[in-house]
Image 1 (cartoon, helix red, strand yellow):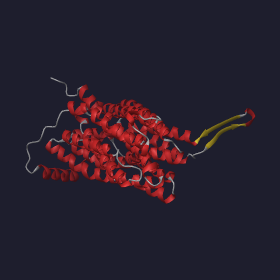
Image 2: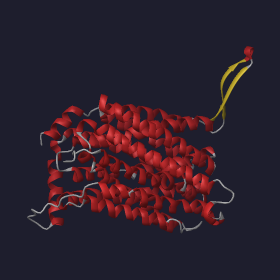
Image 3: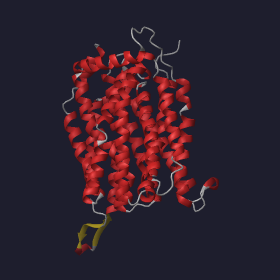
Image 4: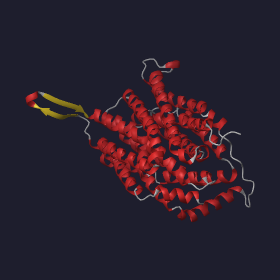
Length: 444
């Protein structure tokens, strides 16, 4: 008889993060988002504003879809089916993103929203497998495995995109630089990557067993169950506090991922090549952070690990907002003839590395804490709520960033909102009692 928690299933589950991370790395954060603001949109300020609205629309759709589809999956045993469906929505949307040319703003935004919804909904149902494939005492490190696998995938894909398409004078496979074709083709690479590397997930993860005992039609019963969960969720007071805190700090992360490359290019003058290298470094540091702090999660608890990462993210964002985009004289000792000069771009690199180190464990430990708080047999539905709370207000960060950027004609003013979100999330998470939340889930 095979053990319940097999290494093969953990590997298969982690491979989904490896497969889908290049989408958010290449499309949302470092390549396509930057390309959109610089070349498809009229200018970088307008492009930043429009990109923020696309991220807002994605967040609203995912917030509406995730809880009801989670309840539906729990009742009908459709978790793996929905994972497959949304994965291929992301793949299709990524393929079509190759088509929009400079000036075709509406077409580009429409398909990035479709692809991004597919990506986010796929994450909902992949996350829901975590309590099934990992024992409670190892959830933190297994979640960390997934995130570190994801960052390795993003790193390799980003490096390949740089070597094959972005950097060379003559891109590979006959691709030209006309109308940004060498940039747009990275969307096809993302789609192919997700198609190939998600195969182990679909082969080795067990399908759900359908619940045959339905008193009502399954869709109606799903809405009924969802309504009951809303009414009874007050029993899980620590879970509610955690999800409330996560609304803020996760919104900060969503905003960073959507605008990190855009901010680097627009405020600090990063070239596409520099953004790619920047992304590679961030993926390396994020992968290391997720892996190492995944073990710390099991030692000191998920909440404490998240708080450590929140402090690191607060410091990193504060630095990114206040540093000027010019050279700074940090040290001057005239009688020793010593001057230490450092550029604003260099300090931004440092802040980016800090964000990389702490963003991985922040996400991994949030996922593991949620898994610990979930009552047995309610994984899909509760991870639907996890996505719901992550997206219900996730439009606020991008929206405010766009508004502040437009009002002050400055990306720096827009990015300042991220710092506020991390501070608020840190303060709310202090109210969570992790042990009490775990006991409540186990006694249901």
